[in-house]
Length: 485
Image 1 (tube, one colour):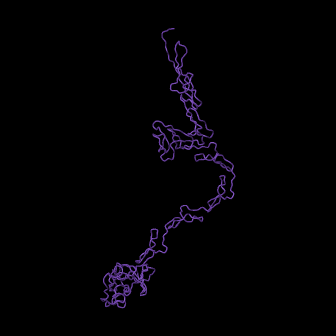
Image 2 (cartoon, rainbow, N blue to C red):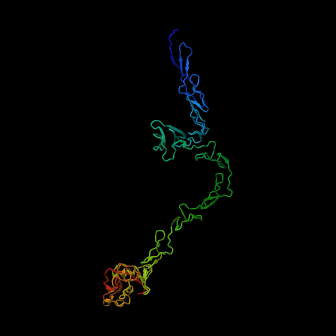
């Protein structure tokens, strides 16, 4: 043996060592350093516990202290299994499992057993952190996001959740971003009834009914005593209502009111679809403003229109009646006519226009107004009976022109009338106030000169003048009359 120096040769041995953690956990194989010292006795094992809280140290010992209660050793670290708060299946986060689901059930992403293979997740998916969870082919699928598209978020292009640059939720709010917001149906132990997410765990067969609390199907005896329609208590029907009696109420068929789109009026069953407020009437199911025109000939109807207008220069009084002008002798009937109580004649109230003598006769012969069609062109005596305020040319005055004196010799100074536009009538005319103001003051009479039968006598009411004109002129006015000549 040579003394005075020692040679150390490091040798690494791979020792398969299992972590001695709690049930459900595990540890990886450790590499311990074994040092061989020549001529110095047995090999020396160096424990491998750097950066380890627990587990086998590779030399037959343990790293760290004793494992606390409800904690396991997983990959050299203390780990608490995530199997609390209703989690009944799936990965416990520490290399173990929280349990498995029975036949016909699937473990959802929130750790519950469900009859829905996709556990409430649709094809549009949701986000579980940076993992896209979606249903495809009848099973739950996951897509793990990575560099380039590291986040789970809404993809407008695919109208679903996908790996994107930054997390975002569906802008319409129809789908949640986080999978935790998805309702997971729960039909464990239930054959029927609500699944907790608005769906059903199944339906019961004939003669059975679903017990809502237990979710089991129980026998049911239908009861239709005193009922002609409606529920029989077992999910069936006691009868159907048809025709006019198509509405079932308290087990009896009744008439179905027809009030769709109707605010008022008959409902078809002897009732009403509603009443209209004051001032409105029901027309074909709609409330419309009811004109208030009873007893009114004019004035507002209460609905933005008029009950009528007054004719012949009459004014509408506050009570809705047409009132003739006051202060005259003649009677304005407010229907387009003026009556003379002395002569018995009925006159056209409004100005009839300007035209030739012959056209004036034709106009009056064809006039139909105020319910009459026997109008005619007046004689010179009838026109003179309308003169008011000028005694010389009024009826009985000294002017010699009248129906019995129809030659040019009958004209004279007494027929020249009075001062222009100084009469008591409208606009200073020598007419009763019952007539409206006329743009033309000279009017044809039917009375003509005897010698030639061409000129005809006229009366100018602006100065009460009586004289004659050739019948071809077009600027003489027309006012028709009816009654005995």
